Length: 587
Image 1 (cartoon, rainbow, N blue to C red):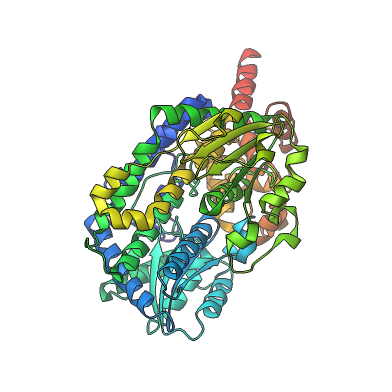
Image 2: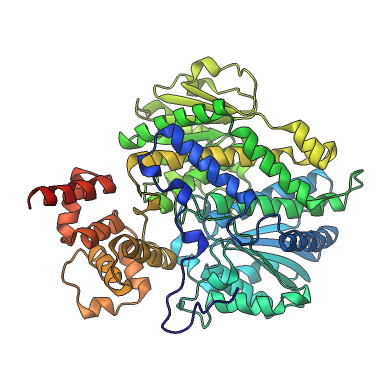
């Protein structure tokens, strides 16, 4: 497909990862049960493909995965001189972290040296809280990559950027392309390459599109790889933590499970497509009618908590707990929620977390992640409006949770858990083990069953917090509108949201955004001339920047008036409907 996107003076078409999904157009007025059902339909698109674009099971995608399995296996066999480096921002970096943790542990279990490393923009603080400025810094990414690969002779580098847009990753890919004697660069994302971001980036003499175009020219050499199946728009537009995050996890784990098994004497030969089909079987299996009903009950409890200024707390063990922590960390940048609205805790804390920088608890309460921290600082003070969600393998729960005076939910892989009667809701997950064994064999299922457990927890946790924020009014139709304008990507996304619903030009929409950021109805040319980074610095600590700008643009009212309207009614669609209805009645 040929595109003129990126030529001077032409509008870029909307990237697939930023588009609105027709399935969820009315999710903001859906019931909790309907919300969960709609999210399941969107998750199915990961496997079914979208429009005419190549899917997860496209021959080109499968061939690329097989080649990457071979490269990764070569590194696993020579860990002293080689490394596999996974890098990304936000959700992409967090998925890179848990994948690195999982496969290093698996290699140790198999008496092999770990060789996986992760990089995340903002370093380990970004595993818990959004660290936006480093995401826009290509040079920062390059320096971190150099540091992580010093002395290595063979590096498989996978730069994860769901929208093919992150400058942090773009700089790293460019560095790899300039040093192909050591690096095998891979870009992993979910847009067609012609829709890679082409905006100018401060501190860089290139755009992401230019880097991807160069990779396209070089990929025939089998030294450069582009892995970009299109899984369709997110259920909440732009929320790449969801389908794109799940697809990232699925693809990375397929590569490294194949590479790990290839160096073991297994009876059944590795096959990539059947391994991918396992995730599809799990996706269909966990969304049974009973589970959908129970997940919806938790969604309703979670929505009630947020609407009542309560908090949602995840607590769990090992990687199940980490999946809850990742879900919690994604809510502030996605929905503009506070760091206390959704939090995650892990039994044994940093000892079990195993991150690069170790114990970060001295950085403040939001970096205090152990269950002991929760028992000391949270559980004695919980309110009836709070919700604790326990993520458990065996269904056993610490009695301090069962006795706390708030709503409680259990998500476990146990049948008839011993504490189920102490919970308000329980989701009892089972995996389709017979189907998995038929696809990939018993040995592979035994080695990697935890991967299917983790993705199950991810899908359910994503549904809970997405549904809760929808019920709170953070979404207009299926568009996140109360996002934090805290990096370059989100600045442009905010302008796009205003333009989409107001019908104004890009320049006019930008002006409304700046008026909201600077709380003024009279925008000076001096303010307009500031660098985007200056606008971002001013906007980052502010709340409801985009809703105020959106209302001002649609209703043609002042910023102060839009602020007053939102104070009375936080659900944006209702504000617009009521205001327009009032104007009509006054005619």
